[in-house]
Length: 222
Image 1 (tube, one colour):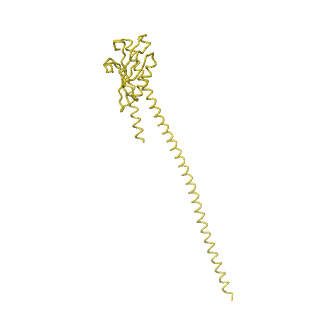
Image 2 (cartoon, helix red, strand yellow):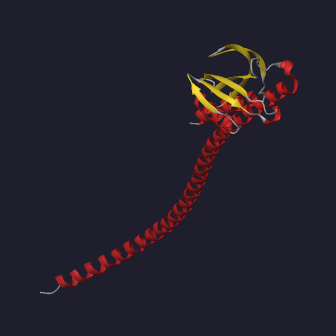
Image 3 (cartoon, rainbow, N blue to C red):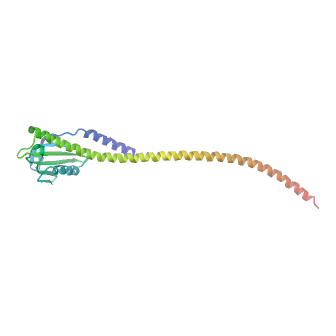
């Protein structure tokens, strides 16, 4: 049990250290409609289904015509991002899950209407990087928050176990004191009993003599 807890703690600590380095990079990625420039980030301590669900909800917070999932890809049709003006964009997102490390790599491409967002687009590029990173950080923290709660539950159980051990220890010490008192009382009783036995033996010997004398008197009667 102790080994399992320490292993879990070590893995969790390693994940936390790694998760602190969330970043976003852009480069060519494949989507259902071809290869395009996209923004890629890694989300930690989560699952593909969870990330997809949260990304879909994230897109729906913007004005849009529709947000749909098809074959593992999420498509946001005519998304209006106020910071970019009133011209809508189409947003494509794909997800790669590594169940062993509990990480999800997310690729997001922004179709500006014939051209895909890239580093040459200045403010929009920086805004997209921030948007993706903020989403990755928020989602990771939410997922890790659940892990923290799980660890807190384990801590609570361990603390309860410690309290039980302390209570047992107190009871054991109390039992020892009771046993000591009983032993002392028993020793006193033994000492008194032995003295009483000696006294009783003396009384018996004296009574034997009385009996013998009585018999002698009785035998003289004729």
